[in-house]
Image (cartoon, rainbow, N blue to C red):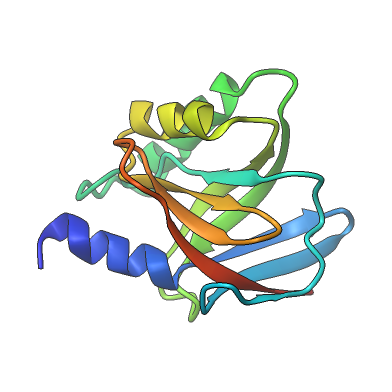
Length: 147
């Protein structure tokens, strides 16, 4: 398995935690394709972006924080955003992220690519998806919402 394949395997297990989404802490966990549990809280798809540790790179906490701040500053003014973290379900690895509403897949992919990311997440009423930044096909799973 290549480095990239190993990272994508990790993405397939990743969960999202949003500490203040409409006044409550929520978590999204992947589920089998076609399965959704909970009420999707948006009118349309949202994306999860990070600038932490792109590809195989591993930066210091200070550098990752600087990189994440730069990504957030690049977001257009019309985009709604929530602080988030994505990572291993057991909490062994997390990356500061931002959940955004108001970008197209292409816009979100481009932001991820500019920050060296292999992929971004898209969450919709129908799926929790890994969307490769190199324009490869998305990989869809289901999702479970808690909180």
